[in-house]
Image 1 (cartoon, rainbow, N blue to C red):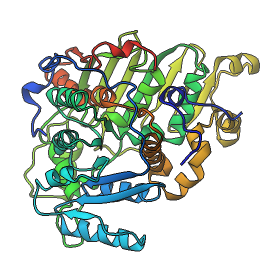
Image 2: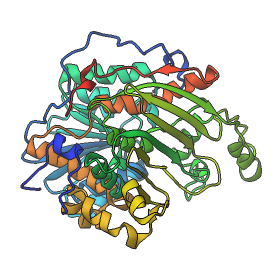
Image 3: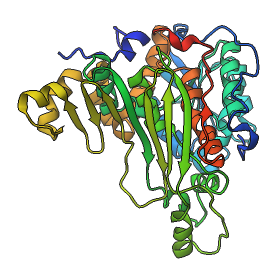
Length: 455
């Protein structure tokens, strides 16, 4: 690992040295907005103990779990010592993965749906990674922390406000970190924009836009070679029969929160949300997948607006069923300029005044000087390795590498349980707002006032 690790403060300033619940029900909305128990000592800025190596257990060896295991096994000083899954096919794939790498087979937990509890008790683990269906995330993360393990959980961290509060209080009580593994924060463009924002290129930040626009109709109807629906198809599609709101808010929201310094002098304060009618999944089922008899209730596209305590706004959208190219929006606006992605483009007021051209700076050649100036320190250090070995263009490897680096060097993690809770909260809050005809929902202060201090 690096001999010159970067601290949380330096990391979030983005070095530019280049130069379980089946239904949300009453847990949405104002219920759950108040902390269930007295706040304990904060986990903000708390460093990991230094580790000589990082010993990891993985719960969930499906598509996402296999991908992350591949990334982790390419990070120096990592040992995956335990894996839990109830699908024999995924366990066989896991065995083959370790055999191909010439590594000892991890201890396997396959007995039943509760065997993950035994994995969490394994005493030679430092960190547990959870890559299971959403409704299991909170329960498994709580189990890991209560057994003395730091935990990284796939997105979202929880689907109700009480779940999110329980994650916060358990992390504080056990003094174990609970991180939501938001890989999009570590994307090449996202980290470049973070550097730009922290260097003041955009001036005073006033607005951001974030989204998860991803046509997943085929994923939600995917079958294995034997004709059975794969796990993700079943559980992901099921949520569209239960709730109407933003079911997956964090991929776009996490990076924008980093740009705005959320929990470093500002925080999310309120949300309003509306959904369109539902049509795409119903029509898709009628034409290609007849006879299932499912009724979908989630509107095709959900649009939410969040406001921060300091008055910034964030447009947040979700659509996983419409025929449309992928986008996370990834827009940030300030008093001196803006960046927008899909396609990537930059606007700087000073440049426009000099050139007298009120237009975007876009295209590979035009953006190249800015990429060279604002490349993030992490991408500069391990970007080549990330692009070679990592999923999603390398961001998954950067994420895994950085978590391990923080544990090896005794640094505070880049995001903590308060980020996990705040970034996940638009799920239940949007459901409550849609049910209330676009009613305003308050975002809890999961940090107990600690958001107002600089990192």
